[in-house]
Image (tube, rainbow, N blue to C red; front, side, top):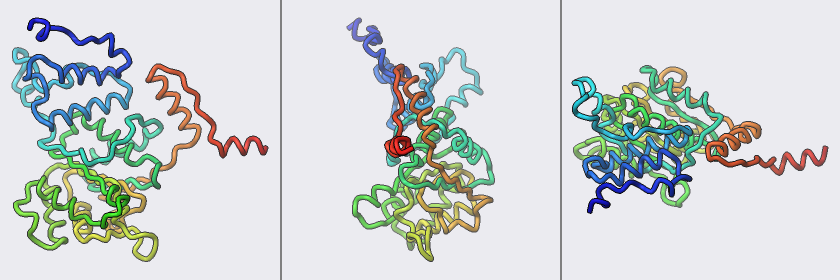
Length: 312
């Protein structure tokens, strides 16, 4: 029994595991149940902090995952600070991406500035598939989590991407119903699609909320007269309302700019065209990632460049 309660973790067997992950493991295996996560929301918050630390290549202290500081040294102000953070978090529906992000410092700074600017209501990250839109947003979300989401009261993420690849009908109904329930709507079945979108916008906009909508392009019109316009009235209403008024921030990733909020672009709605990282930047990213992992790795020259060199 004494060994069960007091034996330390075999840290020598975890030397190849990133330090932030070891800290999380130690917290999960605490002998005192009160020192473990007390709810799925607390665990998700801790995991986001760990992911952000690993992605940034930095270590974390055990205290950063503890929700309650020692009682003897706590002032009233500190006690209030321990409760800082969102009331509710739901990010499980966002896509899983790589944790490492290099060469995107300006894009991360853009998102930081948008969150801090009370006049910015909606941000759209636009790029072709594979450029790294979702990876960028996930990395930024991890940084936000490490800072208790910087005064956000609610954090809600949703990905529409699976709808565009599974062959199902391209509908926003599932998102709308789930979001209305999550944000506390008394009866999501009431009203037209447009009315539901307006209602959801009001629930979101009046409380400082970080809303993340990933992969919106399946619900947009393809190139043509209506290019980029949303086909779902509920989403049209939601984004138009949020672009007009929002105490938080809505972050969208898509392959096409959202035409429905074009009237607000440059003022309360900002667009960021994400560029493909250059081959040189990708090589530097590869080297930095390898250095963080304590190993050497050379960056291979892309086949197209190799063939060009041979021809020259």
